[in-house]
Amino acid sequence: MATLKAPRGTRDLLPPDTALWNHIDSVARSVFARYGFGEIRTPIFEATELFARGVGEETDIVSKEMFTWEDRARAASEKSQSLTLRPENTAGVVRAYIEHKLGETGQLQKLYYIGPQFRRERPQKGRYRQFFQIGAEVIGPSSSGSESPVRDAEIVEMLATFLDELGVKDWKLMINSVGSSTDRPRYLTALRDALAPIKDKMSPDNQRRAETNPLRVLDSKEEADQELINGLPKIADYLDASSKSHFEQVLAALDACGVPYTVNPRLVRGLDYYTRTTFEFVTETGLGTQNALLGGGRYDGLSEIIGGPKAPGIGFAIGEDRLVLTLQAQAEAEAAAGNAAPEKKMDTYIAPMGEGQNAAALKLARNLRRAGLTVEIGDGSFRLKKSFEAADRVARTILILGEDEVASGTATVKTFATGEQVKVAFTELQDKLRA
RNA sequence: GCGGCUAUAGUUCAGGGGUUAGAACGCGGGUCUGUGGCACCCGAUGUCGAGGGUUCAAAUCCCUCUAGCCGCCCCA
Image 1 (tube, rainbow, N blue to C red):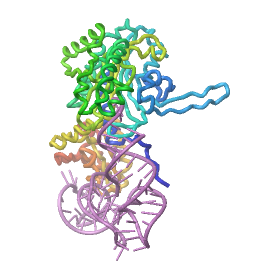
Image 2 (cartoon, rainbow, N blue to C red; image 1 turned 90 degrees about the horizontal axis):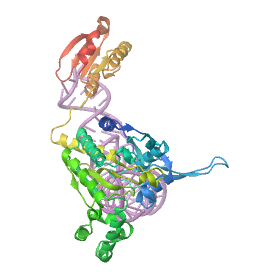
Image 3 (cartoon, rainbow, N blue to C red; image 1 turned 180 degrees about the vertical axis):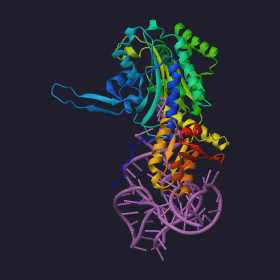
Image 4 (cartoon, chains in turn blue, cyan; image 1 turned 60 degrees about the horizontal axis):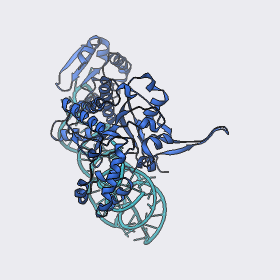
């Protein structure tokens, strides 16, 4: 029988990699808390309809990438229901916002989430069928200030701080405004009109896009079409006064904070719900073509689309898998340059000399561990040479525990880096071993 | 979903129809009975991704499948 493997596009995360994941999570929680965000946990599956309406029936995500199944009725009185593994988390958060009437509090809601998302795509580096997103949403009634350009700038500035605290070195921020729900249709009409006479001169891909999703022509990488694309109408020229002023205020706030950005008039996003401010942080390190580390934007009409009250909002989703790849690639580059980060080792490794010392060793380990030290423990059957080798791999020091030591209540402690070896009373061990 | 490349030891990889499949690192043991890192010696690595076919003979050639990677599509 063939051995069982993790399904296509999924993977196991193992130590030591999981330490990096945990670090990213904890930096995110720490940064987000300082900006007043609280954690929300929504279900991993939702009614299919939520994504069809929220994300958009015509998007690739909904039309061909969802894991959907029919949950059968259990009784004649019950209906079966179409359920879907969440392909993103914003729709779920907005659904929860509506369901729990968070808008009735009148308060601005600042919510973040960390968790797996699912899309049935062809796997590639930085693209998995189960992938992890760290995201946040700011949402509330207009009276709570949810539409203010300050919110947009705050979110973007928070992301810059997050990436800086994590140590991501070469991120670039791309930002654009895709206009309000009234600007966008006007622009789309103009874009279609402009494409109609020239699209035959474009690549087959772009001819198809011109028909199905004209916005996507804008971020085409097709070299030969660039000149034609540059001549197309710009969304910026179709923003109404309020959208234009909103965007200008966002940029002014970023300028004031010193957050560097590039206005990219061709930045469009694939989810239908985005309005006005959209942004993307990209990096060249560690990612192939999937160079977007995170993306986000404003979604002023989403709540109403899925049956809720008016609740403008803005949010983002970080591709945690991609962040991990980027940080690992950065660490590798550092190591290659001779700047390897020092290994984090445990405080000590207890080497019992002879099986008679095993119980005493475990008792000593218990006390030290309860005092907050990181302690590994060997086995009395090991030869001392083996204990040293095992200890040197995982710990800064080795603590030798033989009959003499147990009898006298002292341990022999050797520090690998210096070669220093001393006898230490059990009672003084925790001070001696603390890094 | 489309096109291409790849799959051999724990890891990184070499090999290329012919007896028993290799290297390095790592791992176990020894030189060395309570003092490691270095050195030397010995040892085990394995359904050669899975299944089928061609052949006297397949890890090697062919087909199918599975998975990964690259590009496209799309996105985080």
